[in-house]
Figure (spheres, rainbow, N blue to C red):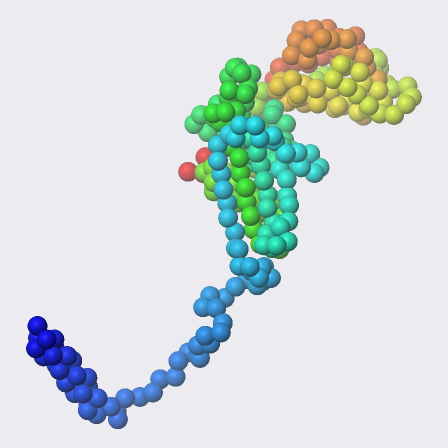
Length: 280
C-alpha cells in the first residue's frame, strides 16, 4: 500500500517539474482590470447599506391571522406602524390581522371606493354577506412585517412594491364604470342653506350643520352602500337633520331627503376607484 502511494506521489512531482521546465518567455503579462483589495467588500454597497454598520440588509415576513394580536393604528389614519431600531439601523413597518384590501390601501380608502378584479373577491375584503367577521378574518387576514435599512424607504411606494410582489397583484387609482347613488335636487326651492351658526360638523345620526353637501357620502360609505355622486350643483354649506335609524334603509333615507327636496337615485357612473387586480 505504501509503495502505491509512493508511485503516485512521484508521478505528481515529475508532472510539476516538467511544467516548471517549460519555456514561458513568450508569455505576455496582462495587467488585471483592477488591483484587488482584500480589505474592501467584493460587492459595492449602496449608501444606506454603508450607513448600516451591522449589515442587516432587509427582510420581509408574512403570516396568517394571529390570535389575540390587535391591529395597531398608525399615524394619520394609517393602519400600519413604523418604528426605528437604532441598534440594527433598521426601519420596521408592521401590519397585523388585516385583509389584503386593507393592507394594500393602508386603511386610507373607503370600502365602496375599492374595485376588485380578482378570481375570488371573498378572499380580499370582508363583506357582511360572508357571515361572522372574526371567523372570516381567521381564514383570510394576514400579518406583515418589512424591515429595511434606514434611508431606503422613499415614501409609501417602497412598501407598495413589496406588497404587490407578495400578493401577486397590481393596485392603484383607475377609472371604472360602477353602480352609484346619485344625489339630485327635486326642485329649485332652497331648503338646504345653512344658518351659518356654530362650527361645521356632522354625525352618523343624520345631523349636518354648516358643512358641504358632499359630507353625506361619509355615512353612506360607512354603511357599505355604493359611492355617492353629488349632481346637485349646490355649493353653499347646508343644514340637515335626517331622522333615520339605519343608513342601509334606503327607502327611509330617501323619505327624509325628500323633506329637503333631495333624492338618491341608482345609476352608473365612471369614477376613480382603487383597483386591485391580478398581476398576471
